[in-house]
Image (cartoon, rainbow, N blue to C red; front, side, top):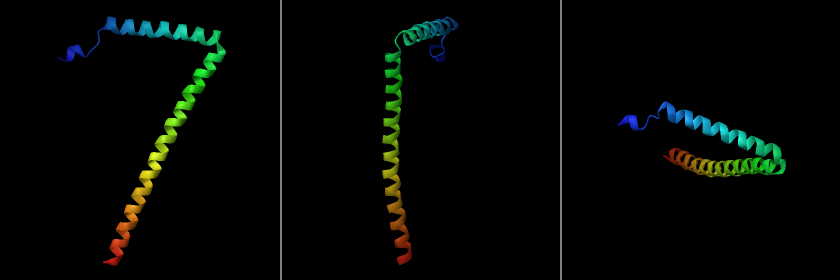
Length: 80
């Protein structure tokens, strides 16, 4: 059963060859069309920044909620 999940050497060579050819084609395309390359890099940076901002906001709200829970727990402990 596990043999199905393990790629053969031929499959790995084909994959490596395909990635190599794709890298060369995209490299040539990047050199030939600098504005498109710049736009693609900017889009990657912008998407990373947006994803990071969303994660930071989610973390901030969770931290705020946790702070409120700890504060309530401490107030309850002082009252007893």
